Image (cartoon, rainbow, N blue to C red; front, side, top):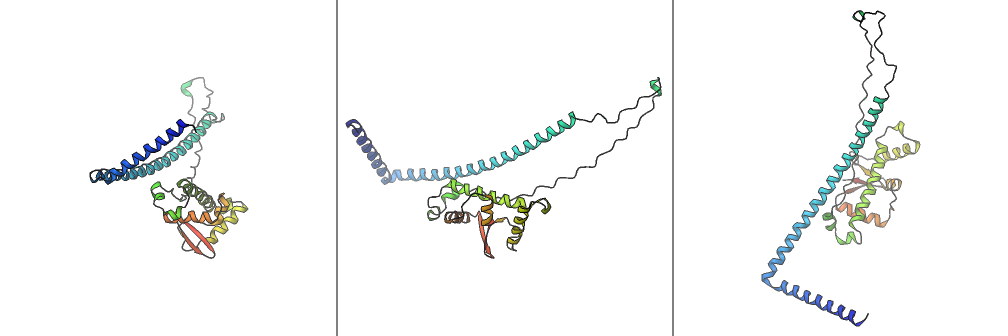
Amino acid sequence: MDLDELCSHVNSKISLIKKTLQLRNIGQDPSLRNVLNKIANEMHSLYDLLNNLEMEVQRQETISNSLKELHASLEKDLVEVSHMKENIPPHLPKRAQSSSSTPEEEPEVVVKVTVPEPAKKCTKEKVIKEMELITVHEFENVPAYMKNRLTYEQMNNLIEEINKAVVGKYKIVHQPMKSLNNQAKKQLVRYKEEETKDTKGNFFIVEQDIKDFTQLKVDKRFHGMLSILRHCHRMREIRGKGLVRYIIC
């Protein structure tokens, strides 16, 4: 560092100290303290507004994804209808030709059309309850001793992985037994054995489901993150028969 750079560095430090002293003096001035308090209150209001905006953005993203799925489904139906229209069988019954040369005497031909049986209504897909993401406001209110060095993004990444396990499990649960392969049948039997009267009507997973459907490591850090999910009311635990069942709230 040459002399000019050193002088510039010292001057910037002196300028910073002067600004700090000015701010301290402002805080000690009763006439300006009210202004600072008002600014602090406005900051809190802005913080709450940002949280509400974030929740609305998440809601709009969910709606957007649903509309995209609906659009894709409609496009698929349109392709199938167009294919049917362009491939009508040529051997459908036609109006019979009369042997008489006089068109007025041509007998009326009745064409018998077989009405296809109405298609069976598709069974409505069962809804699988997933864990909601944590908001910034909720994460900020988690005690520091729980968060340690965890970040907001890491917590929501965990929730997304847990949701993969929930969806993977209940897709198997909702399928008919005869449609499952041997591995899935074994899993379904285990799922039934893990159910209790306390889990009735609830969606839940166990550690084995985490291992089956995700790449998460079930270790001390993992259980620490589960404590934050319990604190934010995203899940609760039911213990029994040597198992911990994680109920999705």
